[in-house]
Image (cartoon, one colour):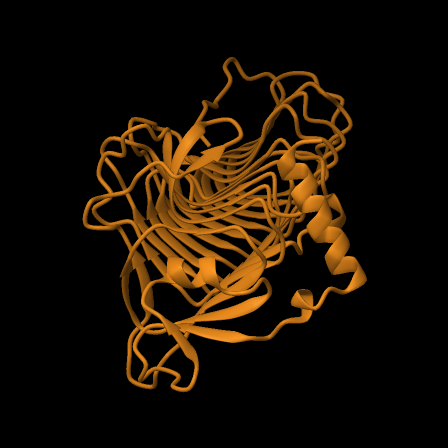
Length: 382
């Protein structure tokens, strides 16, 4: 058993039996003494999260904090107002970012706010701004936030929370950048604003996530959930203004390279060169329903060995392909979708064992085409 695995297992056990620190409500403050007076104050976020007892609350007062923060123990980190001040903003240090973390597939990365090898960490009411990051020596990718091996499968998606956070301006001419990255962690990501991102505003690899009610715009992709068989949920998110970025020409609103996920009640709009919901070959048992997909190239794209997936009751408007089903896995059901103003209503890639009726079409040139000549798709990075 690795040190990391042992540490997480011990933390989970202590929480289960009810340790004193698991119930701690001690509050500390980052910022001037005039903000929330009477508490212990720290001048930087990093000095606070490194010094307080596990389970503490750390409140960050309005201001600009040019630092990279690493959290390795359970705590709550929240921005607060002092009655007149603006937001608490984590910005790039004057000397620039350095590689301070790792990623299970990418290797060394630079992260503005990193949570790693722990459990029960909540981040809320903060702004993370990547303006001026520039080139980062030795980093394969830059993240605004990363949760790295936080929690275990028994936590579901409750080992960490990211809520009411803004991640913005993660743009770089040298190192690709992302907004929020969840790496083999068990996290709920809700009610955040993520915009102006090179590649992916919210991404997850392994673990289990609940991604709900976020507002995402101005990026290559919207949400990517990959290499997981857990019951991931992507619901109620609004994703808009996706387009070519850092040399890639095809964007994706919701990319599910994962099994057993539920994708429901999301809105994807203004991605004329991309896909609304993309289900590539490893998708199994996914439920895609009640989404609204407008102004895309392919609204619903099912491909490869995808199998036993339900694509139902989605509303599609102003697209070239309403549904492109090029899967050969079989057992998929594409029914009760409504397509308005599309060249192809359903485009199937030849004989298929999938169920592709009934669907409703308005102002569609070809309702169902079972014998297209070419694959309409392409690829896009995570």
